[in-house]
Image (cartoon, rainbow, N blue to C red; front, side, top):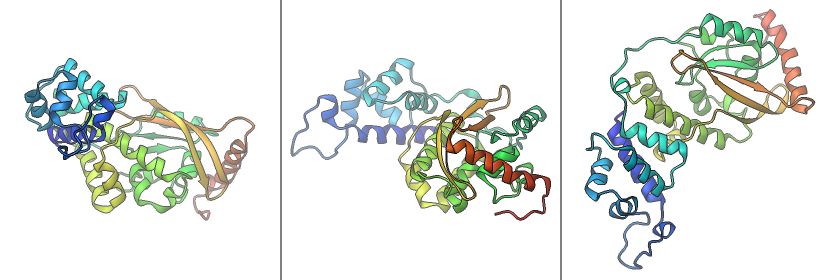
Length: 294
């Protein structure tokens, strides 16, 4: 990914989304050709020279101070996630600017042991690309019972939750509000891409989704940015029905962006009963790999 052009696209989109009236500018009724802020208006409001801002938007500035970026973020009314993304794009670190040799990620033995110990809790380990590196019996049954349980063990068959969100109909049908999930999936991927502009595997994933899914391409072009480390997933499981499950992302130190995600239900709720039922249905499949899967 080209960080300078990504920076320009991000600034243009956010500038276009902010109306003059939002920042106290009264637009002339006949002379204005654009609905959003002009470059010179944004630069003036942020206290930045128009030359410096233009160079930033055109990808010709080699650096920008915290003061300049914070002023632009305030003027554009960026969220904390969007501000962090702006800084990632404007000032990629030396480490992230060097293409890293491709390597296959694996879940550590201790992470796998932890997953196995969480026998009643759906859990899985993901890398920063959203590749599933490992899952426990409940994690597999909850999210991807239509896939082979051993599929995360081989890079060629390894599931990717973002790819599945846009290209796997059975996974899509799990979510009662797929549009919200799709928006969050793209927004979180944008954040990761800004932090790792030379990640070849990440660029290949984005390219594949852009080429094969118009819905993804349209959302990607709007450059949403958001991170989500916890919340509630509203699911409609094909075997046990509706469930509202809380989730937490737990980042694994020293594992290059790997994280463990666990899903839980409110005690005494119908969702907890459904989750227990799913566990009892998944147990025979784990014991007998030749059992019929639905």
